[in-house]
Image (cartoon, rainbow, N blue to C red; front, side):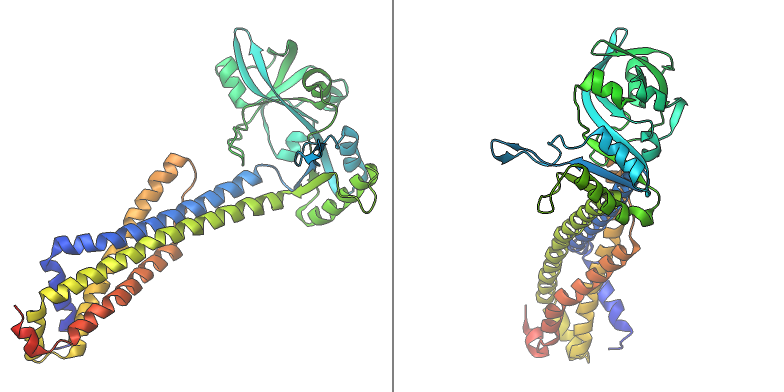
Length: 405
């Protein structure tokens, strides 16, 4: 048999059993599609996480309170009252790398306007907060340092508040009430979208932290200090200086642990991205199992095919075909099955990725490397699982094969 005729004979054999060929390739199609989908969605989710971290602002350092003990049990990080407004001022004034610092106090309250009300988050912040977060004001203005010093009854609201209380109308100059406290709206924030933790950032009311401390939350300590550093190269040294300064201000001895936590924006991004990467490859590995299962299905079908075509194989060997010819024929059938499954899996995977990404609301990234790897793996599966049936066919004795019913 001519070598050029071997692929033609293999493809002709596959066309004779179109339904079986399709069903056999289905396992590979599903496996490749699952891998493409999981990798595409995982990479898209990683990009979305990175963008959400970037929305925190540029060169941001977050300082959290430490933990406190209750009945000898540590309640957890952020539960202690160890950060003060004076700490925030000291970070801003005494560390050259720090250009802005905003003490933060949060509470959840019902906001009332006329006969409408909305349960939302009230954030007490300094006038530097929007600079730190890189969050522009869409209309009106941000409160200034004088408003903070005077604990002015003013507020800057997010887009969700505008929609829920004012039905999209301009709220500038209107007065909302929080626990009976009148707050004049002086600004509306630009849309921000979802946060890294999945909350709606636009569902927010900003007030001077002095107003929040004295009139709304009743707290005396900051829950977080948002710090902005001059540039990315200064992040590490600023983190060290922040730690040293706060330890000194809190009177901690060298043997005592920090009663606060300093975390950079990059650390938040790295942790979130690493989690996304691990989940992506975990899901892709699980999806890859279906490729293995599909390969077993191909081996099973090829073994059945060898049994069904024993007389045909014997006839080919009797008229001059050699063992390597038969081996190559069945290998080509197996590889073609897997390649068809790989191509079909890519198309199905691309479609599934688009649909799921549109539903989930995050971008889908189509990895060319993942597609090439998926097709290469499917071809390798065809060779690996198709070799034994092909070898078995090539070892048949022509006389015994011709006698087989």
